[in-house]
Image (cartoon, rainbow, N blue to C red):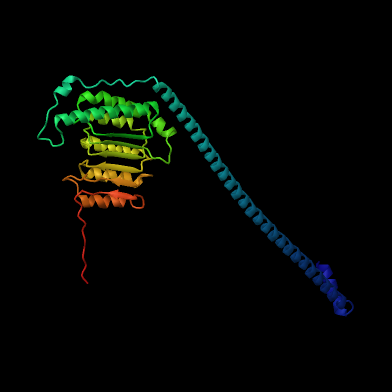
Length: 342
């Protein structure tokens, strides 16, 4: 390089090839610029290709997301469809199973006979008037009431056993006090009631509500225990206990039945003391989350320990947007007004 540069300087010095030498340099610069332009264009083309590829990849990612979303939606739909069909198949199978159990129970009950013994002569001879208890009628009326009770309880029991009932269990009036001589008859009734849930599930016309009512009688602890066990699966639409004497154990029976029966729409607890505000609050807690209750009738249920106005407030709050009928008459409820003076 040193020799060539010297030679070029010499040539330029005597003025022979200087122009040609500058021309060569100029051509070399042009060639270099062209090469750089080509490299730049190539780089730009590569960048555009990369951008285009990125757009294609982004579009493919969006398509993959959309496809994934569609697949998830389809899988969710298929899962819901499977769950629905499974539930329908389960309900159909359960319905057939319930009908089979009902017909089996009905066939067995065709051989059944009412066997509760009537009260002994000693029971009738020992009936006495009780002038200190105005709820205990005279002896001759007690006998008539007891006889009517025996007829009614046997009739209801046989209707449930033989499948000839229309869905209503209705017994009004019973012996006071509820002597143990009548316990076998309660046992017959509650045994039939325990099996009656098959009938309620399979044979009742759902446009015609089923109902259970016991009124104007004493319910001993033994009877309440029998009823509590037999009513667990007997889902009546209407449940009525009116003017009975059963204490706190009876209140527990009512509250437990309401909570466990999601088919219940009407509750009547007339002239049966609710005992205390704790029971009222428990009732309101059940009403608040009950799926079908729409009518509450509690006339004359507040004793000295119940604040009628507070009971009204609690029940209305628990049953808002749910209760269509509420009867709290005879509970010493005083409406309070606040007057503002401007």
